[in-house]
Image 1: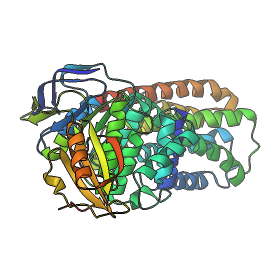
Image 2: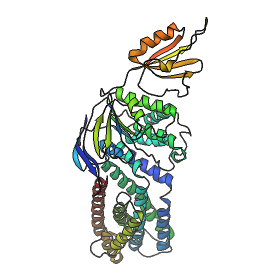
Image 3: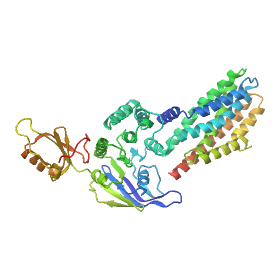
Image 4: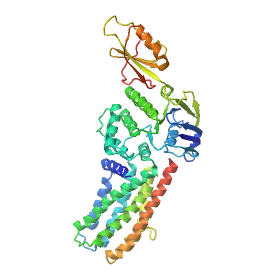
Amino acid sequence: MLRCEAVGKRYGGGRWVLRDVDMEVSGGDVLAVVGGNGSGKSTLLRILAGLSRPTTGSVSGRPPRIGYVPDRFTAPDRISSLSYLTHLGRIRGMSASAARTRGDHLLERLSLVGGRNAALRTLSKGNAQKVALAQALLVPPDLLVLDEPWSGLDASAHGVLAEFIGEVAAQGGAVVFTDHREAITETHAGGAYVLGDGRVTPHGGRHTGGRLPMVELVLAAPPAGTPPIEVDWSGTPGVVDSARRGGEIVLRVAREHADAVLLTALRHRWSVVSLTGAADEAGFRGGAGRAVR
Amino acid sequence: MIALVRYMSTVLLLSQRYLAPLLLFLGLVAVLTSSDTGPLTATYASVAGALLPCSVWLTTALVGLEDQPHRSIVVVSAGSRLRVLLATVGTATLWCLLLTAAGLVLPLMLGAHSPAPADLVLGTAAQLTCAFTGMAVGLVCSRLVFRRQGYALVLALLLLLAVLLGDGVSPVRTMLTHLQDAPDSSAALVPTSLMLAAATGLLATAAAVTQAITRRKA
């Protein structure tokens, strides 16, 4: 889909921020761009989003519908978040009511605190970041460009963001994001590019363009009979994350280990509350959860 | 495009940054035309002159409302930088039309005149000539071109002076001198329309220059 060939960028007569960058982004890809502060991540994303023109080289195949979330979202003074989303939806060609409904739905999912009719500038950094995220998803994007989307978001919004990324990729859109924390990029991206010295090198990752299939397993003590035996879930192979929610234990298990984990649970007299396929993400949707010892 | 203009107008309205140029314009019109009983041709010439600095101010204020990350979002949403720039010009034109309407009506209320249709047409054309020229200056001196507002202000004042005093080069200067000498409004209509066309050309050039510079800087 999107192809960068020998892209270089410098501002005025300054140093080269990017040099000889070759990159290819196809539909369904989730790619991370990793690099330190000032390594040119934002510049690369601005070039991908079509906001900046490369000094040398070329970018081709940019899709029409792009969602862009800048690293710093400074809102226009006094407009309310819902009205802002409605206006931006209209600019993208939606009807006012459709834009309003969609914006409302997105803010609901991101659980915006501070009121959707309050002026944007009264929102905290994290909540403003949620509005920035919502505006990029008003129409399902073919290319979603996120500049440090995790910074400022709380734990529950992390989960929702991972869901959004999964949904865009599932609909055939490509996602490119930056972060300086390797842990985050490894859990969320299908592939990664490392930026250093203005040059880009592909880095590890599962270059399959997809997400790891995961299973979410919810266990509880059986309603009657003997109580189950405690298991060290975080030490069980395949368990990526475990948390306690009320009386239930929520496990996130890699697909290939799901059967073994399920068998262990049943052997220890746990009762299965639910078993669902899930996207590859680190945090839980509900967010609240202590690790099970 | 309509959605963009609506959005920009809303942001401008909520920011209240339109208020200073609006009040300046109303004040200037009140001072220049109160208890004026002369021919409307000269009256509208001075009103048009008053609109010039106000349209510069309004345009720079409108562009200055959005900082870079926020403008990036609008540009990505709209699909192209050019579309956003054209919408900016459209929004500025819309607001200048509101000022023009005030500039047409106020002198009639403040002084003793008997307006003919030709007077009103001339008043509109003269004010729009100044508004377009002012918007051209405003675009070139806006945040899109200058990061540093101090330089932009100095350049804007210099350009305003040049436009007001530059004999033979500026449509505003040519039009204003012509209107002072014109016997009546209907006689001045054709030369004023020519100057309006020249001012439109100037605005188009300024928009093209701004677009080229923004693209280079991005």
